[in-house]
Image (tube, rainbow, N blue to C red; front, side, top):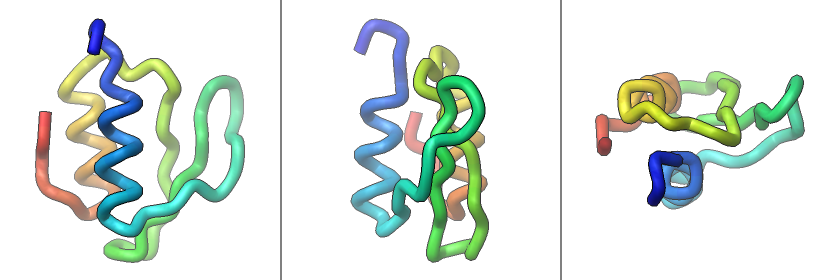
Length: 65
C-alpha cells in the first residue's frame, strides 16, 4: 500500500455501513458511523497504522492495522 492506509480504511468503513457525508477542511472527508451515531474525519493521506486504527475506533469498529 506504500505507507498510505486510506484506501483500505475507506473500504473497511464502507463494508461496515459507514458512509461518506461531505468534504471537510483541507484533504479531509467527513464520514458517518451508524454504529456510534458519530461523524468523524478521514484524512486522505493516513501514513500511520495507529491513526488508521484510531479512525476505526471512532467509527465503533475493531482495530485492523
